[in-house]
Amino acid sequence: MKLDIEKAADLIRNAGGAIALTGAGVSTESGIPDFRSRNGLWSRFDPMEYGTYEAFRRDPHKVWDMLAELLFVADAVPNEGHLAMARMEEAGLLQAIITQNIDGLHQKAGSTNVVEFHGSMASFSCPSCEARYSMAEVRRLHLPPHCFTCGAVLKPNIVFFDEVIPPYAIARTEQLVGSARVLIVAGTSCRVVPASSIPGLVKQQGGRVIEINTEPALAHLADITLGGGFAATMTALLEKLLE
Ligand code: ZN
Image 1: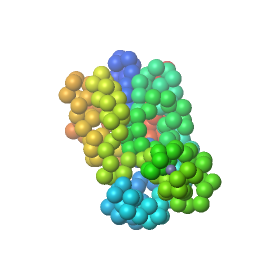
Image 2: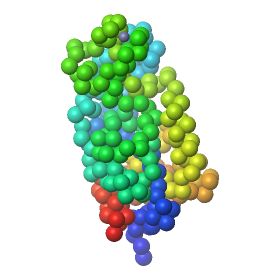
Image 3: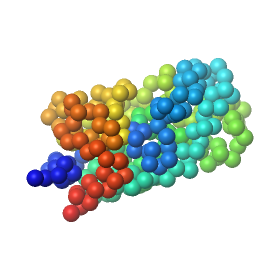
Image 4: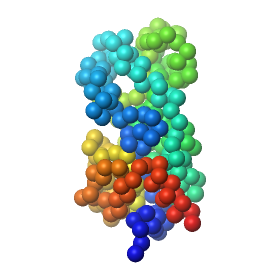
């Protein structure tokens, strides 16, 4: 009898590759807590008061109390799971990663085809004159950081709760999902739109879904459920794929 990990590797190989959808759970092993968890960011900062662009426009200094706590993601390093996904891409077996994370860890691991639904903490923009700044530049400034050119308070290029997902991210995702034969869902219970609709869309067009979650949440959709931690499971899957 084949192990689930072997069946997952067979599915991916036979389909000529997969795409992945990732969320907070893939970064917890890199020391980034799930912002929605019990002691997470959004339990300490009311999302309506700190997580909207409306709040930022009203009082950017206040919102920076919360953003200052997010700057640490710049120090996080990718875990074995991120690295395994990058190796899968290198081997031609992972076409792209759609991520809900803002930590940039997939790119740090070496993945090149990454769609960031919720933007990224890697860069900042001036809401007034649109000048752009890197994380390294912002970390050298007193908080909250001000634009050198016009003096406005800078905003990270993340998507706040009242902002729309960047249209290019939606378009690229539609394109990827439309031709996906296998979807790996990792570290996300897919409860937040628009990620929540992706596994169902892949299934509708006859594709297969492989779930990697410590607490599986897609039993109704997943063809294969791998219940281990992200780093260990992805490492094992990569080994099977490269055998
Ligand atoms: Zn400016």
